[in-house]
Image (cartoon, rainbow, N blue to C red; front, side, top):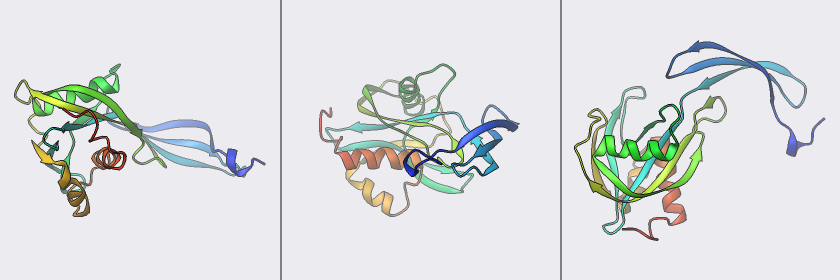
Length: 187
């Protein structure tokens, strides 16, 4: 038997129950370190990228107040979306900022990649930090809410009051605040 530190679940096979361009639901034949086997549901969603857009000179972050119909909530969100086929996450992040807000970012760097529901869902989320932005066009995605620059200093209270609940927005903003990335090299 494996020690606790190297014990892993092993998928002996997987089959799709439902597939579309948005979601695949499947069952995996899983063997546990104890030798027990069972079928485990797996949901696969396309990877996503989002951007914490900073206007560091003014201490602001670019966010949208929008409704999400599935959980029926209103909340502040970062710009972001799904990766196009063969698109790098950093390119998706910059593209989505431009499409949703009309801003072209000046510089962009990777912050963190995370899995929002790691126990049953495959859905990598790539979070980027953009410093500085120039308004170059009107938004082309018109159903993403209205974007505005919010004071970064308001973010902790927005989180505490439940006005930021989207996992990508929370991870990106909390990562930035915890590691102090808003203080160095802002434009």
